[in-house]
Length: 376
Image (tube, rainbow, N blue to C red; front, side, top):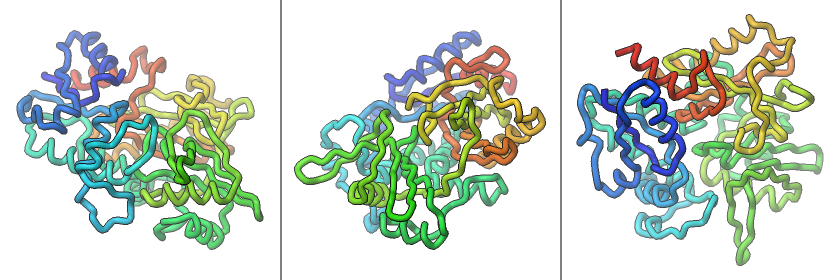
C-alpha cells in the first residue's frame, strides 16, 4: 500500500495522518502539495498504481492555493450572477487574511481541478472527488439527503434567494421569523448568519466581520461572533452572501446542556459511526474553533435513552451512505429539545479532524488506517 496525501503542507492534518500511519507500522505517505498540482509541477498519474491510496485533505490555510482555485474557475460560468474576476487578476490578488471573496468562483475552480486531477486514476481515492464536490455544495447535498429520507432542517423555500429583499419576502410568505443563512460553498462556519426578525426588530448573529474601507464593504471570516442590528448593515451582509449563492434553512432549536445549546459532530468511517464529540455553544454556531465547549458523549443529557441515541447514530450512517465512495466524513447532528427528534445539519468531507476524542482508544486517523488494513 502506498499512500498519497494531497494537502497544503502547513495543515496539521498531514502531521496527524502521518502519525497514524507510523502507529500502524506503515511507511509515511507521499505528500503532494495542492500548489504543485495547480502549477503543474507534478501530476497524480505519476504516483498511480492499483495499490495506491489517494487522500485529499481540506485545501486550507494557503492563500496562494485559494488564488489558484479562483483563477481555475474564471471562465466556467461566464453568465453567473456571482462575483467574478479574470484568471489573470485572480493570480495577482493581494493576500488579505480571512477575507471572503469570489467564493462561488473558488468552488467552480476547486470542482474543476478535482475532476481533472483524478481522471483515469487506477488507485483508490478515499473520498471520491465527485462526492467531495457534492458535500461542498450545501444546496445539492441537503437535497440529496432529503431525497434519501434523511431528516434535515426544513429549507425555507425552493426559490432562489439572491438578495436581502427576497429573503424577507420568502420569510414573510412562510411565516418564518428565524433562519440560518449559509454560504453554499463555505466550510468551518464561514459565511454563516443566524437571522431573526420580529416586527421592526431584526438581528444577525454571524461569524462574518464587515469592514468599510473607502466607502465599500469587505467581509471577513472571524472567530469572534458578531451581532448586527442595523438594517442597512444586515442587508449589506445578506446581499453579499446571497450574491455568492446561499442555503437558507429554518432555525431549529437545539437540546441544551447546562442551559446552553449543543449539537454533536459524529465521524463516520467505513460506513460506521465512530468518534463523536458534543459541541456546547455560546452562540448559534457551535464549531469548536469558535470557542464552543468540547464534551464527551457520556455527558449527553440523561433523558436521552441509549436506544434513541443508537437511532441517531443510525441516521448519521444513513446520511453517510448517500456517499458510497467516501470512506469517511464528519456529520453535524442536531438533537431537538425533546431529545427524540434529530436532523442532519451538514456533512463535511474533511470532518474527521476531531482531536482528543477516541473510539476504542483510537483517534480518527488511526481508526481510518486500521480499518483500511482490515479491508486489505
